[in-house]
Image (cartoon, rainbow, N blue to C red; front, side):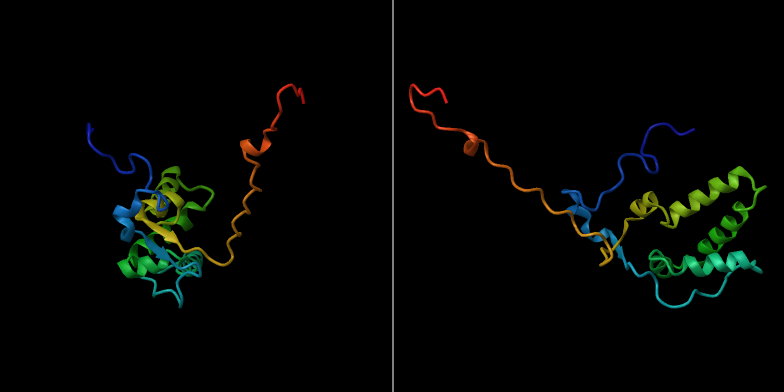
Length: 153
């Protein structure tokens, strides 16, 4: 077992909105809210099941698919779809679910995975508008009352 040194995912996750993120500002990829346009690439593995093809088509419509295509991750996405379909089965092994979670992290399908890959989805029009600011409170000075000598209020 290794001792000391940095570990994968050790420390706080990078935050694109942090004040000190200017040092790595260009390292965050902004993914389109609408997802990847077009149809899914050809299935790269051996004969797929119907469920695998269904997952394949859905996965390639996601925003993360833009980066998968750019990075050439077709095999990894196909393996994820295959293992996901296997993990859905009632008698599947528990370690298969662990593998699916790890693959989903590495493909940026989870929030921690997106942070680790430094991907974020662009702000879309369908996002809820920012909540209005609460009304400004009266200042402490305006709440004070000037009292003349001898007045008790």
